[in-house]
Amino acid sequence: MRRAIGKLRGLGLFSVAVSLWAGGAEAQDFEVLRVASGLSQPVFLTAPPDDPERVFVVEQYTGAIRILRRETWSLDPTPFLTVPGVSQGFEQGLLGLAFHPDYATNGFFYVHLTDPDVRVRRYSVSADPDVADAASGTPVLSIPQPAANHNGGWIGFGADDYLYVASGDGGGSNDSGSGHTTATGNAQDLTANRLGKILRIDVDGDDFPADANENWAAPPDNPFVGVTGDDEIWVYGLRNPWRASFDRLTGDLYIGDVGQGACEEIDIQPAASAGGENYGWRLREGVIATPSGGVGGAAPPGAVNPFFDYSHGGAAVCSNPPAGFTGISVTGGYVYRGPATSLQGRYFFGDFGQGRLWSAVWDGSSPATFDGANYTSLVDHSLDPDFTPDVGSIGSISSFGEDADGNLYVLDRGDGEVFLLPEPGGPGQAGSLIAFVFALAYVRPRIARSRALGRGEDLRPSLSSGHDAAPLRDGYDRPPLR
Ligand SMILES: [Ca+2]
Ligand SMILES: [Ca+2]
Ligand SMILES: [Ca+2]
Image (cartoon, rainbow, N blue to C red; front, side):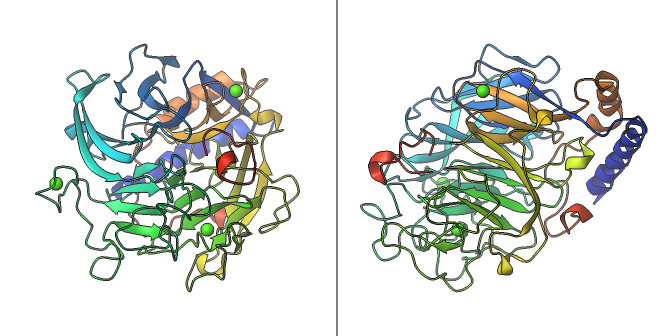
């Protein structure tokens, strides 16, 4: 709670700064900065808790974790770590990174990679804060992969200090065929099956003292502890949850789940949830019965629809969002909690294949009533001059990311760029002065951790009250990431 008050105080200072600014003639304006280029297939960005100086960028195929300096927007020439042995191709590689909540004292961080099975592995920083100990790799858990695609990839710590691990359905198409549970597919299979799930584990415990490859404990309040279903499963019924995030203010979990050939979707789990949600795959794609592969059907009892879905533009209209909101591979993003007041509470996300940058606000309705249209003020930023970067272009959106202060970044895997988006103070404004005011009054003192609030506290502001491989399916020439 102390952290929450600190955060709200920070917002108050921020409001003062904005009021001064708004006293001028012009409305709030934005500036999107390209802060890095020349990266090799960047697919994630994050930062250690409370580190105001650095962000860490994940390169998919090189396996490198690069340090980007916020003071100068320069990339360190030497990677923080180059993870050895990652499979280099298709949807494989180094896919995820998360710093332990106590990183400042224990130096632990976690990666999600394929070799080609999925491995979640722990590493330690060395005596040099800018270099990891490459020999420190320790297994946390692994997930056998029947195919090269649908590896999931996101990992992140919740406000509860548990590690959440997003896992795809194992690949191929329609969650069927070799390596997929015959009757149900993997995502609906809760027994000895980690595919098509988000797992929730305690990385500081070990339920398997005799097994050097499994080093985690099941939180006792996980939904399938003591009942049928694997103890590590948190939610299920997902196809390829490539990117997910916690709202750093409310603790709500947003999951971008890449669709098959019809609908791309964003799922929400409110912070107060006790877990166990079934998001419907393979029976459901978006809000409809999966139209391909003969696997679709009625929604399982209690299954949760997405709060937003959009179509590939074919016959299936999904929840029928406004014209123009089509794509082929969703990239889940973040609820904006950075310095731009007018964007507070907006969930930013995008489409990898179409290079579209969107945002919307969850309308606060209950997930039990979700029908794919549970949002307000859906915006396409792709053609908005305020979201046009100073240099370069936002193309193949592979991921979003947050630094320790909650600034939002977007990554372009196509030509290796990272953008800071947006920063108040666009061209023609007194941008540098305003940025300085923000730096003094707001950005620096901000609480770094996304776990600033305990799960279950709802401080949501009033604002809010894959594609598959072409050879594997419909002849679509898919982008390389999904
Ligand atoms: Ca063990
Ligand atoms: Ca679903
Ligand atoms: Ca670009």
